Length: 113
Length: 115
Image (cartoon, rainbow over all chains, first blue to last red):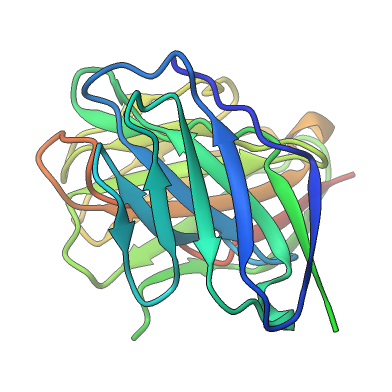
């Protein structure tokens, strides 16, 4: 299973862009990069995912390097409500039938007023 | 917009008691999952299901059983609760025919304490 490496914590000023890095140097060609976040005591919330190309949705942008060994999640205008643990996950086919999310310890993003 | 609903939200059990956690989804998803989350750790997969009537073991299945009698429901059972099963349990569902490009959507969890 491809592993991911994230910094344990980051700070960001409210209204500024938050750039969260993730290293996944052992990713294989058919594995996707997913980002989830977990706000204290709530269930993980899906943010975005991608395979090769950069992706953008209403929540965030995902930038994947050309060699796919790393990626960056960008929250364009961070708010206090974005304070959460952010998980970068590489999915694998598990049991031949479904994808398995391997959650690491993530990055605690603290948005400061 | 209910999404994934878990009941109960909190429960305290005594060692040896049994209980069932219920997960219901209204998104017509084929796949459903049960995870547990312990302090300072990420989520670990207990069991999952790829469709009505089917279940499979995840990475930490011991001490748990599951059933998927209806597509929208996925039940997690503890036959004889142990203190090591004190945890927060999350249910998730997703769509897609075995491809890894369908996100999982999570419920808000069940906080279970075993005394």
